[in-house]
Length: 224
Image 1: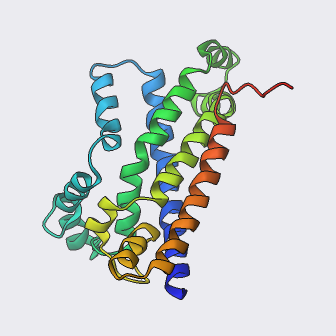
Image 2: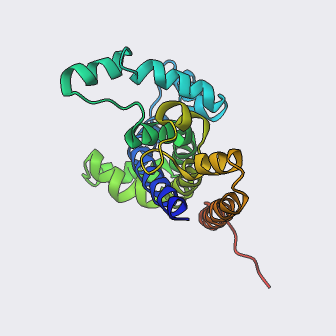
């Protein structure tokens, strides 16, 4: 069972970093698309949402082409900094971040669109600069929807399998996350290990989903 705890720790590490990346990119892009009008805005929205509907193996292939040693980004990183993302936990973070990104982006955009623009305009009239408006008005009013999206993205990153397997592989102790460990345990006939891993994964995802539902904007508490 030691390998199971190592896989759990690695999964939480990968999911945590992936969620942190999506916090910055997803919230930023969600705010831009919620507040700015420009040609091709909805096309950009569709492209940013594409990872939600594409098969994970297709996303994994795109990432291999992009960050592989012969890819445009991967080749540049290797030549310039000597960095290789393939078969590393950092590569697993990138795969999990790409797969779960739409959950943060769509939640953030919807949350910002629910914030009354008049409140932001009032802050401008009072002399608040744009970064101040974002951090003191927009973000505090949209935080529940954003946090719900982050929790969903964390749960999705925790269960990511296809893209992570293609980009990071299955190296015990280095890139073998919970979902990959379950697959390997089933393949090896280790039913007890697989059952334990499935239970841990299921409980974690259920807890995150309950928290996300409680934080969802507009939720009306039940009355008795």
